[in-house]
Image (cartoon, rainbow, N blue to C red; front, side, top):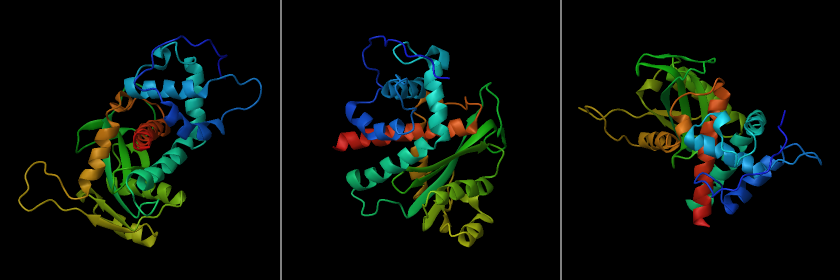
Length: 273
């Protein structure tokens, strides 16, 4: 249940708070899914600011400052908006706007993409879809990101770190196609070798190109196309909520990834206006 509203404690704006312009971009998406009627007195902007504060600081729900609505209210809307798919739809809309209004792209939707994973250690929260990544020596989950060639997030899927990248990528492409997004070409590293390319061709998911290591390469070197998604992982990891896998539910972990992306996209649009 949503806790009754409480008088807000006056405070200076937090760095994570939405500006008026950013709120106007997001407001229609959250208001349409909020409970309506005379009894709803929750300030949805304050709820969203509470989520952005937690995203940035990784504080426990119980330690949200009193300037935000009660933690039960903030958590309730986080779960509700996750179930309704608000984060995914909002990310799609803002990504398309950035492509056209900021980057000057002719097409609102990408035709090329880049895919990669990042392994994240588990906290004590437990939960399903956790395992051991033998390559990275990490017990936890993998964050599987598909971006466009600008590095803007298209799809995020969180799954066990034990799952092979090529097999898990099918979940990413299936979720992407379910939203009507079909890429013509996707770049990936060598861990995606195998049956994935033929599966993508058979299912109308575009062409997979493996980016090879440079001849004689030792250690890390920037690889064409691949660096784009690695930069996106770095962008999102600037939020402490993403420093580990704190959530019991992998779907909630995905929501934090989308919310981090939404924050970046809204800032870019506001800066360009």
